[in-house]
Length: 433
Image (cartoon, rainbow, N blue to C red; front, side, top):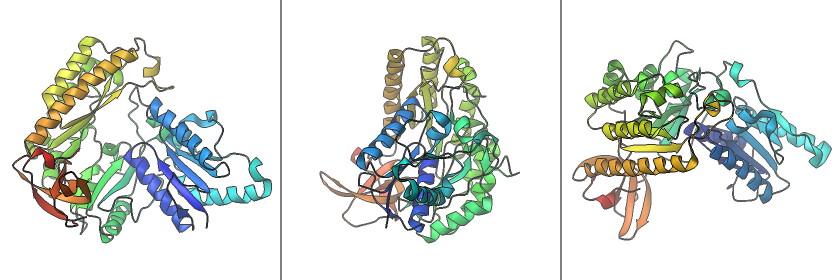
């Protein structure tokens, strides 16, 4: 029996696809081993969202080759899709996006060629013109690495073309999974004991625009699945938050009051250069709508610092806005120029040292806001979906997440994995980072 090891880089969509590829290999008779072990096949699902992601993708490819020089190295996903013919040596099979479902057959063909030609077998490339396909790649999961929460990919591609972003070039245009296929997979996972699902996509808010459907309809369909107790949503575009959307979600008891609304900047001038298609005031109105219908929801976001042309004044506007919104958590990224995007060719690129200073300032602000939000949880009771037991200095804690996605522990040696329990949060020691 041949051994295969897989490594994922990047977003939750990538993670879903990596687990789906693992199932494909398992069904084809491969034994799955750790990526740190010797294997006959190494599959790296790559990422290209930043220069750092590119570098990590290359590093993992080289690491796999060092671990077993005779192994077949498969590089899949966004990095290889975007780089095309510019890939370095050390890769045996290149699988772009929308071709991952064919992994088993591609490998079988490669093994046959290698038997004939040995190590001189040519690199096998399986890449489609992703910008001109309307086909949604149907991958499927029956189990995941996590045993309580399952991420469900429901959508691929993006039509937004933010000026800094390479992803539309790596993922193509919006393609949505059929609603009945999503529901079927959720039902199967519920039968397997999963209590929480997270609906994810490259641009989740665009779900259904290619099928006369929409995200709200999908959420309502998933909500009807017996056995699923919680539904979370991946990153949302602010413009999807309407009065109807927020009110309808609030009427669905399985919806977790944790919303990730992508911001990128709190300065209107910067947002315009980014091609983000909303103003800071419009964004703030969306946050207020969610707070109108949900009691103190956890709002989280992404922010880019050092975008081309970002002056000190623009940065201060952005920081003041972030301070005003009171996010539970802010993920801060230093702007990374991506070849082929409009922003990479813009004038007034910001020095790395300035980016670092601005990043540090927002990290400090984010910690302050996070602490303030968590402080309000002390003295309250929260329903927690227990995921694991953690040994701490003062004993064993059963640890899981509140509906707001705050990690909380209950001190007890009793194994409560995959159970929903009410936890009295008595002190900060129970809130775990």
